[in-house]
Amino acid sequence: MLCPVRCALSQDWNRVDFFEKIASSYDTILDLLSIGLYRRFLRKAVEILAPGKGERILDICSGTGRVASWMAQAVGSGGEIVGMDMAAGMVEVAKSRYGGLTNTLFLQKDVTEPWGYQNYFDGIFASFSLHEIGETERPRVIQQSFMALKEKGRMVIADFNPQLSGIRRILLLIFFKLFERENLDFLSLKLEEILERAGFRRIQTFPVLSGLFLITIVYRNQN
Ligand SMILES: C[S@@+](CC[C@H](N)C(=O)[O-])C[C@H]1O[C@@H](n2cnc3c(N)ncnc32)[C@H](O)[C@@H]1O
Image (cartoon, rainbow, N blue to C red; front, side, top):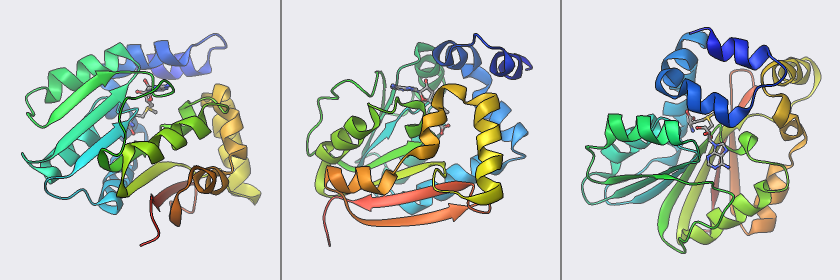
């Protein structure tokens, strides 16, 4: 149980190795450390995406597949969920826990590489994913999301809030220095600019927990 904390505090840890090692206990650890807030935040983000019966939803950086399994229930047997994660350990856990879901597919895939989906999904879900992706690759992932969505599709991004100021920014900065050193550039992300440049319209944001976290929903088209 202490391994993730030890890894996070050591200087030479590697994030992919970290996710490989932690995969089977990831959800439990995050739920315990956040006293259940992590799970509630993800539930709220899914509520905002509002997957409906028969829809096709992509979960990028799907981790253990927990959120994908919730969305699989929502879309029902006529819908389809695709989860993509680059960590083999995460994909194994997802398949062993939720492999029985006939409407769900888990792929081991680096989302910075081409996905091979165009105009296919009704919704895309990205929770605590964008901050994991390199600064130069983030715009490409957003662009791919735009292309992979149907005309009336929408995307939800649920992550830390990079647009904070004052004491809350300092708190987040300390957290990132301790646990997310490799992703520090996320705190200067201009998310709205990147989304608009990719072609997204109608950006709505929902700050959570005093604004430390942010859920963003964007639509492919104006209406
Ligand atoms: C912080 S976890 C979040 C998992 C899940 N989305 C959640 O909210 O519980 C980040 C996940 O992103 C995956 N990941 C990081 N970079 C990736 C990439 N380039 N392509 C695919 N998955 C990636 C990691 O393996 C890990 O499972």
